[in-house]
Amino acid sequence: AQTVTQSQPEMSVQEAETVTLSCTYDTSESDYYLFWYKQPPSRQMILVIRQEAYKQQNATENRFSVNFQKAAKSFSLKISDSQLGDAAMYFCAYRSSQGAQKLVFGQGTRLTINP
Amino acid sequence: NAGVTQTPKFRVLKTGQSMTLLCAQDMNHEYMYWYRQDPGMGLRLIHYSVGEGTTAKGEVPDGYNVSRLKKQNFLLGLESAAPSQTSVYFCASSYSNQYEQYFGPGTRLTVT
Image (cartoon, rainbow over all chains, first blue to last red; front, side, top):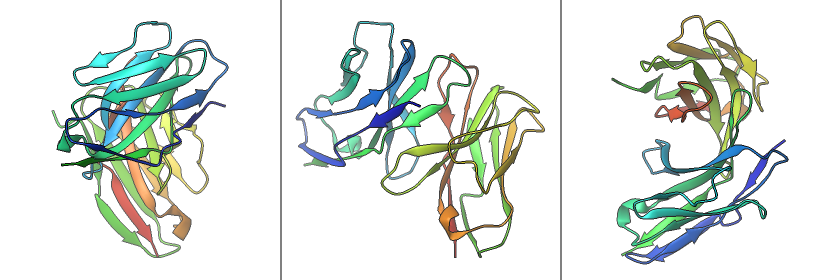
């Protein structure tokens, strides 16, 4: 079974600075998808960014980018120019390309933005 | 277009009581999922459905039942609630296994 590990329960960053959240995963599959979800205090799960394992290029979405290291099974999220609205829980998630494609989540990292 | 909605948003149950959580989506999605979120943990899959009339067990199915009688609705039932089922429950849906999962706002359930 696949597992996802986020080793940083909490992180903090100064407003306008850059922060990187870590994620590692374990799988024997070669084709899969990786995601970062944001969960603000409202509880709503918001998709931040996705990465297809077959793509070597790292995904970017505005201030959010990933560092995808397939061989190392590492998938970190970099947030540039941090804003107060970025404060939230961030979850890394894995999805197989086979079957019903259920999401497997990490434990989450709580990100605090200091003004 | 409301997306994914969940009813109710909050509920308090006594041990042994039963209840049903309703998830509805108006995006014509085939796949629907029920997750639970506990403190210090990510979401864990309870049950899922790949189409109307089908259901399957996820990672933590014990104590729950589900039904998908209509494509747009996915019901999660607790027949005899236990304190260990105190959690936040999320429903999600996706068009197919190639597309993103969209989440509902969650239901906070407390069992005393």
